[in-house]
Image (cartoon, rainbow over all chains, first blue to last red; front, side):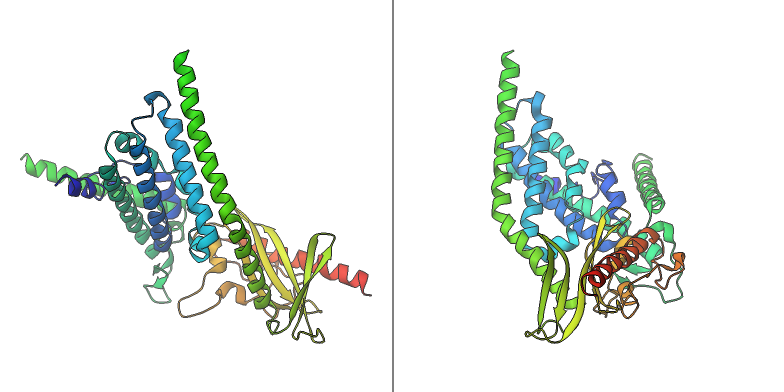
Length: 202
Length: 192
């Protein structure tokens, strides 16, 4: 059924980070630990789903020429509402995720999906697309963060992996580590897809 | 021309709905947010002044501004514990707010970082709690040391900086030393 396909595509075939190359700025910044990665992924997925639903709902009344400012207004409003409600009613969650919520406004995945999908499809399928893309984003974040945290800090989700004699590769938690990890993974995915293509077509 | 008017009208409507909803949500959440901040400050005060939770903690004001707090172990204010100060330090990417409890001689009794937005994985390790423990390991080294003149190892002091987070470590440490000096000087002036 079409619904399953729209969800699954966000995980691998059209993974927003490794395929569509969207949202790379927050990915670089937030992938230094798996805990942060999960937090950012969940928050971004929530905003993405809400934004997709809203954009899809009003798609008939928005003239194409002014669609971008309207999408941005919707996204920024949602993110601020999430921020305020969390600070007021879920203070513990707000403390651990607080840094990442404002970062979601500049996450290109949200604007990208609003433009490429939600503005052209009905509400339910836009919701599914948002979920799939959000999960794919979270998955990508977790994979990158695993490399960076294990090599750069010797831990995974805060739990030590190696013994006390492990010398962490410090630059992995800093910017160079982010670029290197993402670059390597992109190369790996491209190589794998290449092999599959040549195998298929002989 | 008609297009411009139509576009203008649509954008204005969307902007009005957006700002209206935000203003409404802000109004609803504001009292709760203020309450959370107050609760966090109070919990912080009790935690940096040991034995003060059964007693009283009074703010000392200058007009409307709170300079520091005086902590007592009992409600009748006969057993004076020390002072609680709020230290502000310019960190790597945020202004770090640290609550510090000191005894009348300036020895640090307790420390709690109230707010920081430093680099995740580096500066944020100032609040990191190792699995199996209950308090941030980096902050423990402050307790028992004199607050006046406290400095990081790179400035010939006793405090071990966090690897890769020199600026954050220095900002917190220096803010404590400065605020302790300001408050203790002021106390010496008014109660010689």
